[in-house]
Image 1 (cartoon, helix red, strand yellow):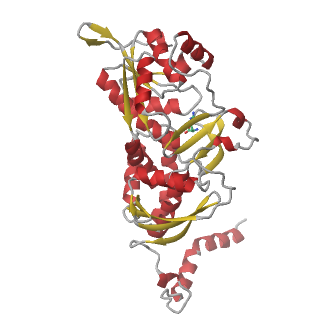
Image 2: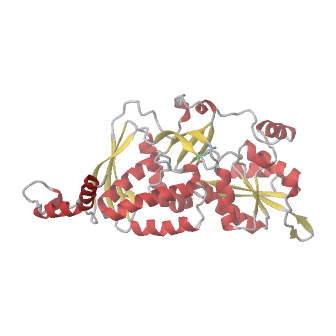
Image 3: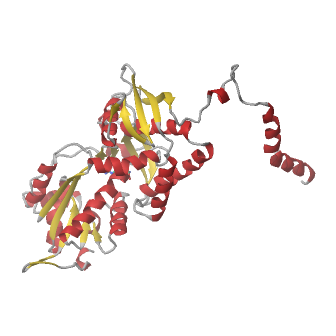
Length: 414
Ligand code: ARG
């Protein structure tokens, strides 16, 4: 319980105050948490909010609200480029899809925010970091495990989980204290979004037989609507998307442009039942048009440029990497080591991929690379064939020898 936590004391002149850094979203729960935490602990609350491309209100508005809700100070950070370059890009190099489907939207933003929470805690001399997660999800794990991996001395608290800050109590608190936040606006879903995608859960989606209604979606148009196909060329350099249709882009711009163009064709809608780390199976609806378009293109460029054994081994690494990141282990020794492997694997992943977008799908229609391992003279069945088929006979015999010997043994020994 929160009262049992012993807070480090921060001295500033003759003012003595404990400080707690709060991951602040600007929404009802974390706005209430500012005063709620201050009341329960007597600590000063420093709000930290970040822009990871979630859209909506600007950072100044969010900062002012934090102060109006009683924060001792508020830090707002534009994290968009950092999020794209340091979190989404590694996920692209890993073709990261948890359970072969989910491009880790929320799982990538949490470590980004964690870094800034820890920085703020150090800057303000705080003893504790607070977040607004419940006790049922993955995000509590990502925050707390991440914070302690970067700063083992910091404590973590979660008012919703640890001090019974229910929705009804939060609304009552906001109204009693006249907080400048709407208590009536209730979305039918719980949503978390950033530039890499959008996660939608709860409400009518909790009956897993219900199809997701069209109002779930914001990043994608209905793929059933008829639209002329779009076609584009993505240029990669060592696994990094550097141009679209010949125009230079940053990672952030690449995602944003593809969110628009692939989103217009309904690309990247995902409806799945997912294994959470806390043991619950949950129904999740995602939309990640840019992420899915980029992964589709990147995967195909790897098919052309990665040597077979590297490609096969990498698939296992990709899955393990995705599970580590999903499970809140972004800052961990195995993840760091796999990153080195992934980086090394990208040294020939350069070239162009042509993608077509239509009817909810992004598919590759062309590939071209100076580092291509595709050799026309090896592949062709035409006259220019340079593959020596006479070598194949001996190869096949020797390749099949172990299983043939085993079959002979099995016919001898029952
Ligand atoms: N289930 C996803 C994950 O753990 C998304 C969680 C998003 N949170 C939300 N409030 N919708 O990564």
